[in-house]
Length: 150
Image 1 (cartoon, helix red, strand yellow):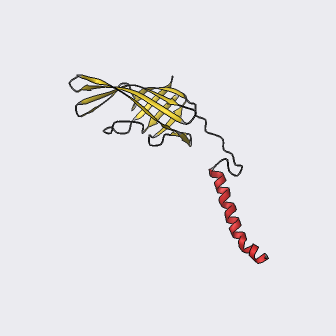
Image 2: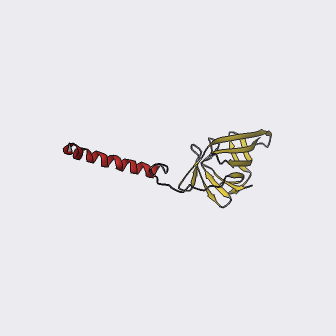
Image 3: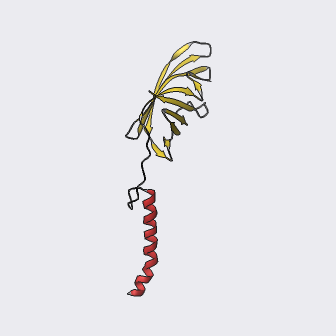
């Protein structure tokens, strides 16, 4: 019986090590607690795209897309909403129409960076959010949105 217990000892030690690692990955397992990342939720107004004040213009196939406003809402339940309004005109100046859009998703925090899966990442500095990889036209390069708290 003693020989059998000694043979099982390495297995028990290995399992204990795995449980300890899992406890470090998930703060609720194993009694190890990590402080939560503090991100102030709220409503933010889009003020600039790629460090240039609104409106942001992009042209493709004879149409000028002018992003004229945007609002970003970061909710405490880990959801977000980004609403924008664009005006579309022909390159000849002819007004085509307005194009409102809403984008939504979930968000989380990794190392003080807000992660918006499939929609890039955002950094918070005081009352300003800098968002890279957010919604854009397929013909545009990655955009950087700058938004300030309302």
